[in-house]
Image (cartoon, rainbow, N blue to C red; front, side, top):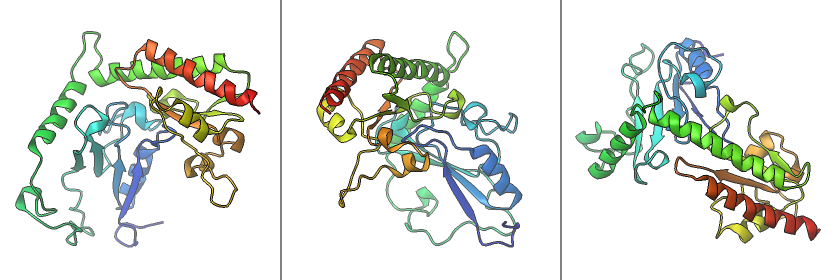
Length: 282
């Protein structure tokens, strides 16, 4: 417990969406708790922006950050431009006005980077104006109202969810029973719409990735790295208690607003063929 003004914890930070499994964290609930204790709260929303709500409105039930937004008690939010259509190399830190105004808190003075007035003396360097403008335009596009009534990001999220489901269904239907495991949360509102962490029982993900990487853009979400001959899975899958037989064969696959059904189908065929090849060679 950290009583306001009396404890040692001054900042809690939590990612909104896990980059490996796509699971959404209870940011709203944790931020609400931190506010009652006088603790600053920051969330890294890099993976989530443009895919789930980042609304900071007070209204909304505390059931899911992805559905109802992150709430009004979040003090700081980090977003990254290339995750929602801006160029790589630009990001943004939102600081809620007045969040350093609590009687026991003051704005930090010992910055790791010192510098110019254009950055409020928080860091040096010249702003990359074209990239900043690009991020602003990308944000404007996400917030455009579509003819159907949804915002652009909501329409994109619906499409990505459908493509992720199509991909998982194709892999499941194309392989024997109990070979495919969706490592992400079961409820759709507890996960990102675009991320699929999928495990293939009895398959080596590093070998799988090596064979398909020139045809399918993906990563080995739990490649077995071992210097002692013992296989080691990623800390995320380990914390989620994913069985080793699936974790060792896990791929991280992502879809985007521009992903087509044909691309999903081609990726599925490629992955299925290689998984079958490994299974038959056992």
